[in-house]
Image (cartoon, rainbow, N blue to C red; front, side, top):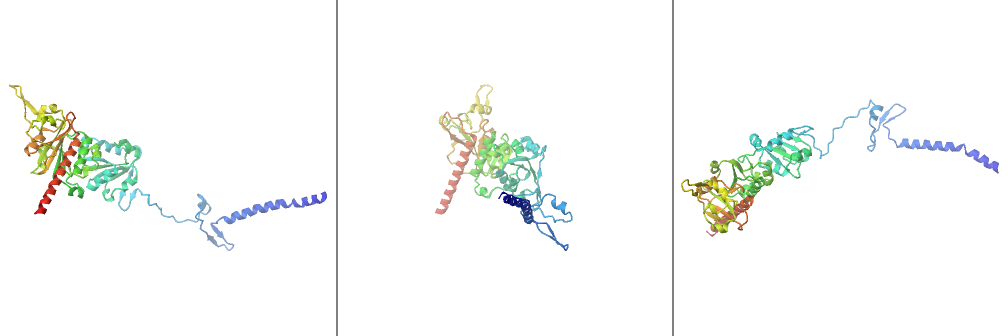
Length: 420
């Protein structure tokens, strides 16, 4: 029995290597069948090429190394719709990419942030997509755009970008020069707008009123920007800024204005002698008298009994008083202007309102203009002991009161015509 088992084992052993060899060869054959050959060469010498499966990508250099004689035609570069090349062929637009050490942004920003350089070169700075879009819509002429993402430029009208320098910079560079807490990634350098060449919105022109605003000695950029915004909202026909006011095109004023610069005509840096040239001939110029002494003064016509935007009246009007050398008595030589509460009718004729700064108040020239046109001192009463209202607040109260009075006047005229 042991001899029989030994013979069986000896007869099985030689088959084990054969089985293992057949198994390895079978795996190789299956793996070979799964491959997709590039060429099939028949015994007759015929060569048939086969396309490679799209799921399989050739290894780098494999095709050229193995078959240098076969050249595949080059396909044109297919670009996704979201990708925009550096050249807009249809519009002929190009943009430059700023490299490290590029000083174009810093040199331009140095100019537009300084009023003397800004006036000399006639350039202004606009930051933010909405403000830039409003400027382009109004007809402002762009010179240079600095942007961090191409989508910001694509949002702007293509016809407005012809001939404009487009420079792509890093967002960190824009952030370094921006005055905003959250920069929007685009800065525009424009030529200083001319109110004669601007195209203001049709809705603004349709709601324009015979109401004008004159800013006198306004030094605070935030106040001026807010006043311009109120003037646009009330429907003012024009805003005049005399010498001594902050520049209307300063970046802080532009931000506070929220696009009002491109909705209402603004004439900057005027001498008082030229102010009447920008007003209708039959206009009446009124002066804002914003004080806290209404109860004590009881509508007095004396200048010393009222404050002019500020209660520090004695300091302001000391320069408007002359002293008799012989008697030593001082007398007022301010123009005599009637005082009237702001909520009474003062819009029977085209009206202009003069708003003075909180520190320096209105100038003598504004009082003389009000006297010569038959204007009045519009008094805004406040509680005794309370300091004056903010200049922007006083301007908003008077402008919208004037709008209310003009609207009521139009309604009365329409009702009279209907009865006739």
